[in-house]
Length: 257
Ligand SMILES: NC(=O)c1ccc[n+]([C@@H]2O[C@H](COP(=O)([O-])OP(=O)(O)OC[C@H]3O[C@@H](n4cnc5c(N)ncnc54)[C@H](OP(=O)(O)O)[C@@H]3O)[C@@H](O)[C@H]2O)c1
Image (cartoon, rainbow, N blue to C red; front, top):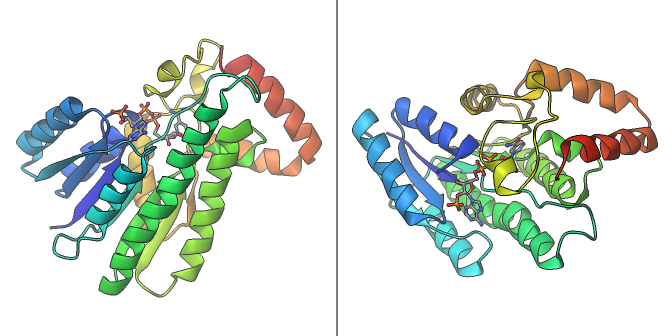
């Protein structure tokens, strides 16, 4: 029996990972801020799949909570075999419209927490000679899209570098880069989605399944859909300035309202 720890497990992509991993027989450590929702999720997954699901309430924008999750990942007596760093959010507004405190909170959750949790997990996994880490980034990592895109670009670069450094130690690291996924993300951020065409939306369960298949294949970056692979391939051919202009216009059209 193996154990997976998922941050941001109660909604969207994290909940899809939890459903999939529980169905495959993995025990889970579920991490988010809302204890009631975590307990409900743990009970449901236990009852449906017969797995053990621990609840760990943590706000990953808080140092002491990051430390608590890192301590759980470093617990040698109850090892975690797979870490999914998934918790994240969007901020409504463009650069200089977003309050500095919200920008800094995003960097804390998307970058600092991911660095500290990946490191706690990878150290223990390296000792055991096996384990996996999935860091949820975004296709926004490849576009000039403000602090959100920059934080996700950091996730991709960090994960690829760490994967190279740990190659041969039995620890797999992968950055997951989905496009638009139907979750609570946009509503929580107060972002309008009416203008996003249907074909651009991905299903969270399919994203989680594709991600786990890519991790098993040893990929270090996963773009879990052919439509977005094609879009990103085309974007690479464009000069950075042109790409910036399109990205900015797309942001105006599809982005925060
Ligand atoms: N949806 C998309 O279109 C999309 C596309 C590309 C990448 N992503 C990325 O995918 C990841 C998951 O997003 P989602 O779309 O599934 O969002 P979601 O449906 O809003 O779910 C977010 C999850 O993260 C938890 N969370 C948020 N802030 C947290 C914090 N400070 N500490 C601990 N947990 C926190 C939430 O629970 P609590 O509120 O209870 O803490 C919830 O479980 C994010 O990293 C996001 O950037 C999303």
